[in-house]
Image (cartoon, rainbow, N blue to C red; front, top):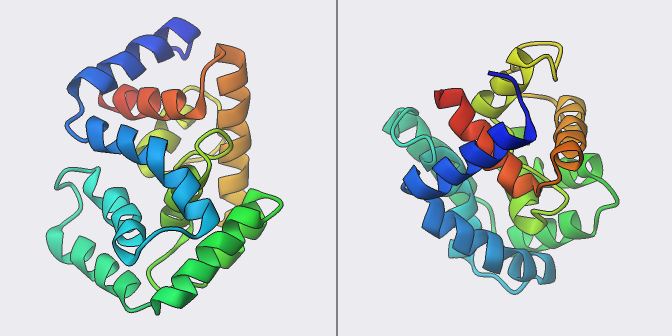
Length: 185
């Protein structure tokens, strides 16, 4: 399978029609950016971002591993989470934002990318092994998924995704959905 505009459009549509989390993800994409960037969110909103990152795999990540990651995040003082997320929203670029976010317990670069994506889905996209692998298999990235990626590796991934979104004339959210589905193909 080659990445083309029509392939991306079809895969993103299949995601919308078939992925069970799509309705809540779409709601998050529509409502969380304003709340997260202005600091008008609650603890449960921030916890939802972390839960979503792991639970989107629908059981592929063992429950004990997922719960441990979610618990590490819950240990953060909420005022610290609030300040860190709003600071990340004001950061000049992905690297600076991720440097701030990864100071939180339970937030590595992949989870940080979920926060970035839900802060500004027009500028950022979440990273994971599935999405990365599709890009690597299509010669859009040079090496296999680094588990977890560094900030610099995320920036490379992000720039590739932005370039593809421009080429295919689609939003990053659409590209993400397509990459997720294409991994399953």
